[in-house]
Length: 311
Ligand SMILES: Cc1cc2nc3c(=O)[nH]c(=O)nc-3n(C[C@H](O)[C@H](O)[C@H](O)COP(=O)(O)OP(=O)(O)OC[C@H]3O[C@@H](n4cnc5c(N)ncnc54)[C@H](O)[C@@H]3O)c2cc1C
Image (cartoon, rainbow, N blue to C red; front, side, top):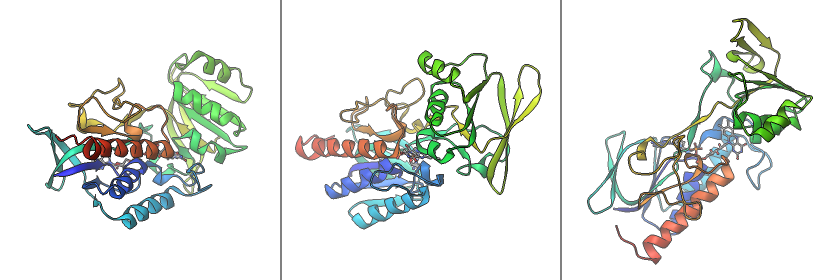
């Protein structure tokens, strides 16, 4: 019986693992990969204490730190596929390999996946001009022409982040009116470097040697295909949290994020905790995911060892 099973090995899961090991909790981390989503990013400039690091190097440093820490079972290359609650309140986690593992507490740090455009060759350009995080990557497009796909709040905020860097920003929206917050809409619609294109469906990303140099969209009113010359494409058509494992136990937001108490990271189900991008925290960032996961572990530690809560 473990005190804690962490599921997911991105910045949140690894940070949780390091803290759980340092607290000498009987813990394990289950993850298909020790890395996280930003592994594909060419340059992360806001991982505090490291002005610039590639996603790959960040992933490696997280892994080195966790393995160097010791004191936690690292089950990588494993996927958790089922969680069952037992009569005594503990949990049974089943892995894809067929193994099962028992625990008093589960910390979900399974992150989220970005909704993709579904265009041909999309994966070829990911991290090479096709990006999903304006807060992270906007500075890389200084003086360049870019397109943002998605006219909801995330798309609008991406445009605002890009305003201080990009030369020209095209905002492509499927519908006939933007959807986000009215003040941000006004800011976007009135900015001289921004051109909003309505009724636009992205059909193809163009590029050479993996570097983006254009985007083809269909004008849904006329059926005409048009090409924009851009060096960057920001995809902001929503995210899909990896919360399926606990959807029958915990309260989820309308978008499927796990609702947590932000002071403790507790979910609505006793013994199940969550941190990082899988939660309803509005900011999807490495530092925040790591911090929230650490907060969760410290609270779990208090519950198990200090308050002596048993299952
Ligand atoms: C291209 C890109 C660039 C980014 N750049 C930045 C940046 O510059 N700065 C910044 O702060 N943020 C950036 N972000 C956002 C940042 O990556 C996320 O906020 C952060 O990774 C969230 O961490 P997490 O640990 O919650 O989840 P994730 O990083 O998504 O990690 C979750 C992990 O859990 C694994 N997993 C999921 N389900 C299971 C399961 N059932 N069993 C086992 N394992 C499972 C996943 O495979 C993954 O490895 C970027 C995101 C992307 C996509």
